[in-house]
Image 1: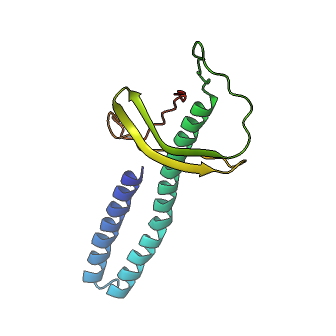
Image 2: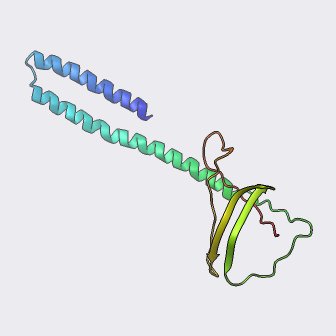
Image 3: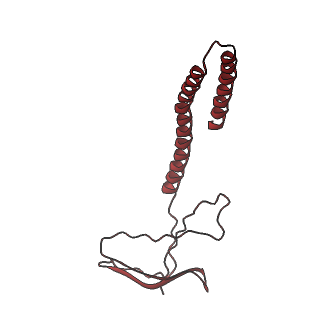
Length: 149
């Protein structure tokens, strides 16, 4: 839509310039009046262009909000492994020292992570996925259950 509005804006400006130049050459209008008319025309189209950009931005924001809603409404798929260790209720701080993660044995994708989270603090770890990104180039979230060692 902004491209079509830009085309109309430029076509209108060209038409006013051609008609105004003809009137200036015939002596029926001064050059100053033509410049004022062109300035008013610019002031007319600027708010319309801003509204067209706002409409486009709003549409992209709505699409993003729909995607977030879709992710938040998706069911959690967590399967308990046979013989999984049941943790007792945890209290106190959480500390990771030189933690490592891999999707396949021998291929560490995250290593050397150390952190300390005091009791009651919420912490999230995130990373950009580079290899095997989707065609649209957008980031993707990967969630994994921890495996005890």
